[in-house]
Amino acid sequence: MPGVYVLAEHDRGVTDPATHEAFTAASALAANLGESVVAVCVGSFDSDFEIACSQYGISEGIILTSPLITDYGPEIWGQAVADLLKLCDPRVIVAVGTDKGNEVLAQASARSDMPFVANCVEVEHKADWAITRTQWGGSLLEDVTVSGDFLFLSYAHHAVEPVPSATPSEVTLQLLEVEVDSALTRTLVQERTTLTEGATLSTASVVISGGRGVGSADAFAPLEELAELLSGKVGCSRAVTNNGWRSHADQVGQTGTRIAPEIYIACGISGAIQHWVGAMASKNILAINTDPEANMVTKAGYAVIADLHEVVPAVIDEIKRRRGTT
Ligand SMILES: Cc1cc2nc3c(=O)[nH]c(=O)nc-3n(C[C@H](O)[C@H](O)[C@H](O)COP(=O)(O)OP(=O)(O)OC[C@H]3O[C@@H](n4cnc5c(N)ncnc54)[C@H](O)[C@@H]3O)c2cc1C
Image (cartoon, rainbow, N blue to C red):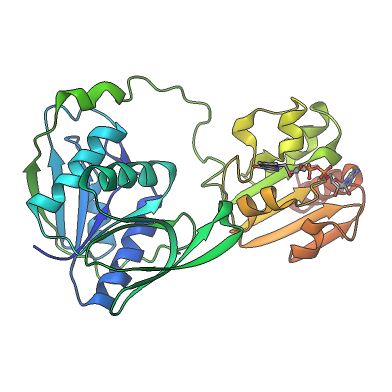
């Protein structure tokens, strides 16, 4: 069946919220192309895939199964997605441009010898595909023209606001068994270590980051306290991880995590381009910095030009006072 096929990202059946961005983007693209949307889940787990399809108004779902697909593996997932080209007749296969989404589509593209355009922000098809995508960690927009009918494409993570359908759909699921080579199971996930419980830097609605201006590992304590009061997470710049004050898991930026919180509070961070590309999807930014000319200050919607060691404790005191918890 032709259509816009969209890959659901999941971990052992639990749908990743990034999938909702892919579902929203795929639905808009399908409407533009006059095609239907088909959601695709790789793996044989019990899944909340069907619920996500219904919430986003997608009525057709395909589950690609094989006894060999026992967990996530880029090669085996990529081969399963490549097999869709033989089993169905997709016009385009879409994913969200997370590490996993791009990895699977890159595998599928190489295995099927079909083009893949990663990290798109706008996609149109007239005579050819006219695409705008992000490059260099999000600091550059590139216009691309691709000829040919079929395309793999990923949408830049956090570029699309997920919009559930006003009317949930009835979902028809189809199981398709794919024949995959056992050699592809050499890169399956075998064990996991949980570094953080609950919201992560990537999904938190409030992120409070500290940079070199914080001064030491111990001086992050007030930022931790503020994050706890606001149910947020603490992030940092690379200057901080380079100094060994915090772990790399907390780093925001091109070589760290891309965040998209409702509020980003950047304390003592200059806003170098490599940090900015990880923070720029934040809905609101408050910079606390002694330098009024700092890049983070000039780009932020709100700024306090002062010493963070005075401002952060003052904000904590005021929150506690208003909550009556001092
Ligand atoms: C390939 C590559 C990848 C990179 N990836 C990343 C990345 O993923 N993430 C990242 O963050 N960086 C990354 N970097 C590093 C980046 O270029 C910057 O060096 C880094 O972001 C600077 O960190 P900073 O803002 O904390 O420090 P600085 O640039 O030194 O800025 C410190 C800021 O603190 C302010 N300040 C000082 N004291 C106070 C105070 N008491 N109160 C308030 N403000 C104060 C200063 O005015 C200044 O603006 C990368 C670099 C390269 C080359």
